[in-house]
Image (cartoon, rainbow, N blue to C red; front, side, top):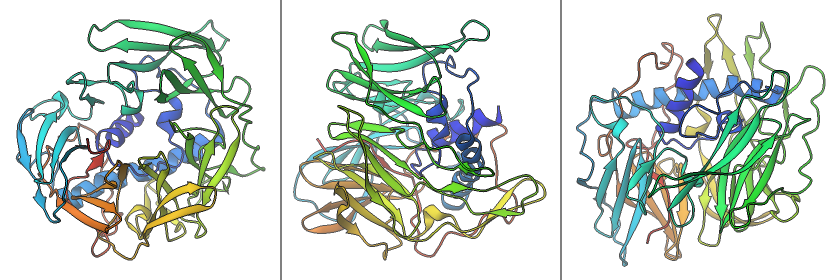
Length: 454
């Protein structure tokens, strides 16, 4: 129960920090119900990452308490209403920018900053919080899957379901496609072995999804052609090297793809092992993903496109109009985390509140800089490109980048979007365990950019 609560908080808050193992995405595909919550094998990298993920879950809640006041105490616009963001920079074109904040989807009008909002039923006052929902603009309704599981035209979505097999045998994994308008649910593929990861995206009529290896700790990327119904494993996709005695792999396994687009399959990962925490440890130094990796969707060839020279984290924010990854690269190496006797954690600073470079990665080792980390008020959690430029969402504001440079477009203060009520038993940070945010760090509603401006 504690694990499910932690994951639902992560997903519902729309805070796109890089969970070092993306554990939820490996263990389940966020389907309509809990059919994929069957027991799975837990390799060492998942166990290590679970500890770090727990620290980050507390960070999210503490951030909300610091920056937004107590959960659920702001005035909340109803679904189908509108709100006005404070425009800070004039833009000379008109379009509509899709964003989310908490469990609210909004269409922001450019250049006036007026937003039409759609509030998920679970985010309205007096109802349960933190359920998983994505607004499908094409269908005009919320659907119970991550956005990447939607088809390009928004008329269908895909999900994976795991069923219990015969005792002693591996479970069966099935991929389903739901037609949103009619509710028709079709099973397009079924296979044995391992648990299902996420649906990582659609490219045309092909659905890509992650699947556990039958005889190894890694994940495989699979592609299903919805026209023919045929499925194939993408490339050799070798398993990660086994850790040495006393070590556990900290990041997602090499070759595990988190998102796909027309340019390839993308992941942030690390090949650095961690030696802690172990029973009795009073401190350990976490290892965060420090590489951006691309997989060729034709043959599974892997290539590192960026490695953070500082040893800090790498976060995938989104993609520009050409499909190039937009990343955030931390300037500081991870700091030691103190393990309290009670089992809690205390550390010298939230790494995701520290200075970071923002870059567009256009090829292996080739980057276009957008920000050098010197402006603490620019701390994006998401990005999306279009024909106008690149949009960034962060706590409290929306930013825009084009040939004219980087500037803030509008403010979204705390309370601008509905804030869900914390569920019973939600984790709270131990007294004194959370440092104050650094000076200048942005505050307000955590705006996530979910697409280009149309």
